[in-house]
Amino acid sequence: MTKRIYRLPRYVDGNERELLVGAIDSNWITTLGPQIDAFEQEMCDNVGARHAVALATGTAAFHRALVSLAVKPGDEVIWCCSNWGQ
Image 1 (cartoon, rainbow, N blue to C red):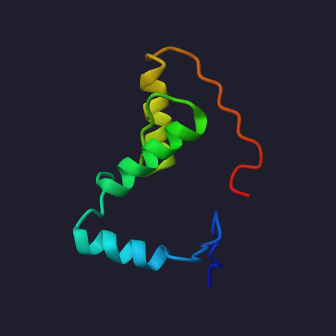
Image 2: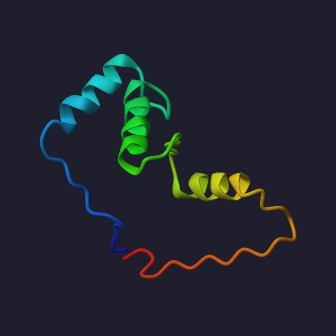
Image 3: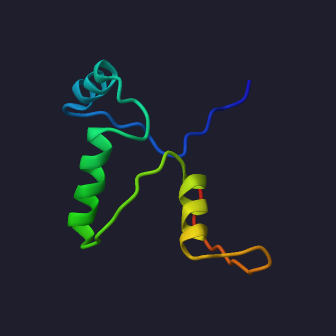
């Protein structure tokens, strides 16, 4: 049997269940909706940015970063990530 390895431990405390049920009940269970808008605004407020984009995966975030930086085929990208997956 293969041992399952989680990248991040699941942590549910407080009102997460209520918020999750509310999102399901409102049918906003995608990468859009009032909770996402609120998260993006809070991120802007916390870091002093004008814009923020919440994405569903790290791959999507990496792709968006490359597009935002106008990286094109043939450009060299060096990606360094210490302790990846730990």
